[in-house]
Length: 376
Image 1 (cartoon, rainbow, N blue to C red):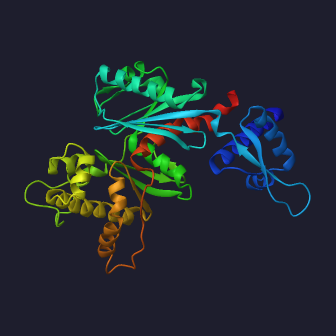
Image 2 (spheres, rainbow, N blue to C red):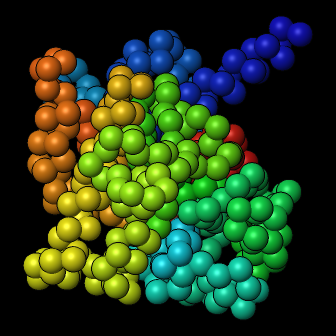
């Protein structure tokens, strides 16, 4: 019984060492021991095991005030790689990352979501070409993460259901791919990528502005109910007295601040074309974007009022939101007048349109760093 308990402690400590180094980067043995509250003797034994698996190596020597120079413990990020795919209504996005979630390659293809087998066979072929071009040793590839902008009741590839929201037969999708798939909703995966990209934020609300307006809630560095569908922020009704409301049926946020809404209102074939027309001063696009900024500001303000947390915005519209962040801040400051001094609480993700694909790739990385490395 005692030996079993000691073995469990050893396994847990080994996992803590791996997760700390791969998530926080290189550090000295002494720094690592202090961070994990482990003795140097215990840590030395654990590091010997991990070095034998080629997960960790000695790095550069640091300056010393006396005695032997301390060496950095370097995580071997290239031991495994992962690929993430996001399929939206307009595009297919693919990224490859290493164990440190560093992006090695990324591509965008003009293949919007389709439920047919032919579409998914093409998507699989594109993914295989991408893998062949960017991952030289296929044995180092973990599973493929797949993020869908509309994904209800998505589970792992072992029990792929049919998505009632998209009508997509996920078992059929898996049959088109040579590698196992892990399927999740796109906004949840984009939020996961944001946690890794800004790990100082232990709680925030993530807003994904793409073909739809979804999101996720992050608490204690974890995405709440990551297996379930996106938060449906786009379905929220605007206040009856909102300046965006007009006669007729009540308006929803998704009627103003999604890719679909902006393209439909301005006759644009894609969000790229909308961006270009907006830059060229198109009157219709300028009006639609001003309304979108108003709708975003209402959403951000209310989310902050409800949770009291930071709001992080990403998705296909993040490049535009970043360019117009000052305009959003002015709107939020005006909405806060008469309450308390305004302090900025909105951040636009710097991961761009690939954030959900990056998050999808991280699924396999997370699993490997939790338990998978033991199989090396």
